[in-house]
Image 1 (cartoon, rainbow, N blue to C red):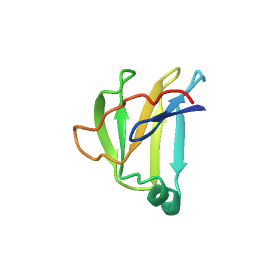
Image 2 (image 1 turned 90 degrees about the vertical axis):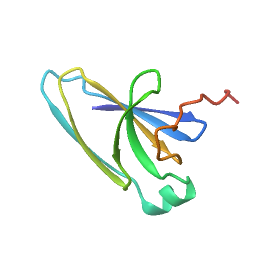
Image 3 (image 1 turned 90 degrees about the horizontal axis):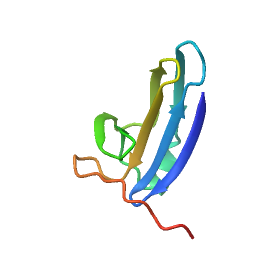
Length: 92
């Protein structure tokens, strides 16, 4: 499984990709200290355009399974509700 992060205005997005020809399981652990420092409140699944698909959880561990060649994008955000957005930050 590969992981690609990107910064957004209210947190970050992580794109997971399963390059295998079989299902793959993934568990992501985030420290509580990092969540507090980054002001992360919830983790959501989003599509490629940043639209919310589902609220996964408001915790520090995510468990998921990806089908072969499947991509999953997770948004770690300080916004918990349906107004959470994926405004891109300008490059420094």
